[in-house]
Amino acid sequence: MSLNSTPSSERIHIGFFGCRNAGKSSLVNAVTGQDLAVVSEVKGTTTDPVIKAMEILPLGPVVIIDTPGFDDEGMLGELRVAKTKQILNKTDIAVLVTQGSEQTREMDDLLVGLFQQKNIPYLIACTKSDLLDDVPQETEKTIWVSAENKTNIHALKEKLGKLAPKDHGRRICADLLEQGDTVVLVCPIDESAPKGRMILPQQQTIRDVLDADSICLVTKETELEQTLKALKQPPKLVITDSQALGFIKDIVPADVCMTTFSILMARYKGFLETAVEGISHAKDLKDGDVILMAEGCTHHRQCNDIGTVKIPNQLRRFTGKELVFETCSGRDFPEDLSRYAMVIHCGACMLSERDVLFRMKSSVDQQIPFTNYGIALAHLTGTLCRTLQCFPQLQNLLQD
Image (cartoon, rainbow, N blue to C red):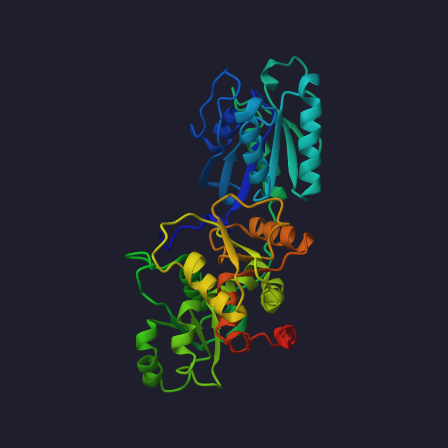
C-alpha cells in the first residue's frame, strides 16, 4: 500500500441500501461518476456487496458500498441479506434508495429502523424523479434524485458531507510527544512481514510521529541495542511489535517508556480499556472453554501464525487448561457469541472504527471478555504492566 493513500479503515464508509430494482447501483454510478456497479432491469443483479475506495467531494476519501436488495428471496437471497446486515456494522453514513412505492414501504421502514438502532446517520434518496410531473420538496432526511439525468446528485453529495462523522481527535502517539522527542520503532522483519513494505500500523505511527515534529527511528529487534547505544540521550518512547516483546524487554532501559503498536492502535480505535480489562479474565478460563480468534482481514497463515499457533499455545501454558480455539476472518463475525469464553481480536488496523467498536460492543453486551492479539501477548509474557506505563490510569485494571 502506498504511503500516500488513505487506508480504507480511515475512510468514511457510505453504504447504499434498499430493495431490488430501487436504483441503488444506478445511483452509486451517478454519485461516483464511474460504472462501479452493474446495472440491469433484472431483479437481484447485485448479488454481493460491491466495495470501492475513492475520493468524492466534499467528503474526501471514502469507501462506497453497493449492497444486494434487502428484499431478496430464497436461500441465496437470505444469505445476501445477511451480508447486507454485516455491511451495516461498518457503515458511517447510510443511504436508503427507494422509489417510494407502497410495495417497498415495509422494507424501507425496516431499514430506517436498523439505521436508527445502530445510530447510523442516514439519508433517503427517492429515485427516478425524472419520471415525475411534480417532484416533492426535499426535507432534512429526504432528497429526490435521478441517476438518469443526474438531477440533484451534487445536492445529495452535499447532504452526505454534512453527515460525515466528526474527527474523534484521538492520536496514535503524537499526544505523548513533544517537539524534538526521539521515538524508536521496533519492526521485526520475519516470514510474516509483507515483502517490500511496512504493515499499516507501522506506517500510520511513522506519520503520527512526524506530525508531532518528533524524530522517528526504525530498527529491527536485533539492532535495537546498537540503535539505543548510538543515541546521545535515551528516546522518549520505544514502540515495538508485540511479538518482539520477549526479546527487547530487557534491552530497553527501565526509565524509557515502552509500548506496542497493538496497544496504541487499540487506544486509537477506542477500545484499549475494554481490551485490558478483557485479558484480565484469562485467569478465569476453564477446561473446555472456547476462545474466538477474530481477524479483520484475510491472509495466508504462516506455520507459526500468531492467531492460530502462538497465542493459543501461550494461553494454554499460562492457564494450564485444555482450551478450544476457533477462528473467523474478514467480514465474518458471529452475532451470537454465547458459546465463547473470550474473544481475542487482531489489531483491527484494516477495520473502520465503527466496525471494530461494533464487535467490541457485541462482546461486551453478551458479557464476553474482549481483547486483542498484542495485549494478550503482553499479558501472557508478563510485560503488559510495562507496556502500559504511558497510561497510568489503566494500571488499576491490572491489580489482580
